[in-house]
Image 1 (cartoon, one colour):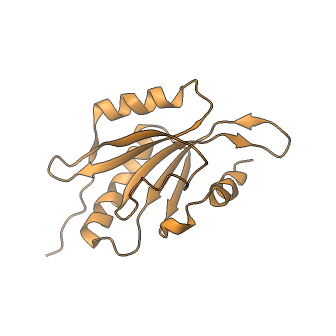
Image 2 (image 1 turned 60 degrees about the horizontal axis):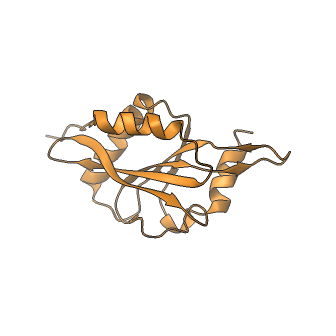
Length: 142
């Protein structure tokens, strides 16, 4: 008998925080880190912080377990325009417990849909989470 895939709900307070985050006025890079509360089967806020030095430079974020990240990034386009895309990054590092990976993978689409995110990226090797990686990914959105 196989275990059924658990799709977690998204905490209402987190949904509200992410909506506020979308319309923030600050021009610095910032991130909201989310995790799954296994007992409650709920995606909840883990950490929120301003990022100095670009994505991947703030290694206080523990990316040794599956994690959801919403990242507000100051993006300088080739034509000089500046935008602040909201990026959803699903980190599922190699070596995570299969049960945890399945729970996060199963909940990812619900979270993305609930908070209406369009720039969705996945990363397996946390060493690849660099400014160059993010700029390359965002380049596809023009």
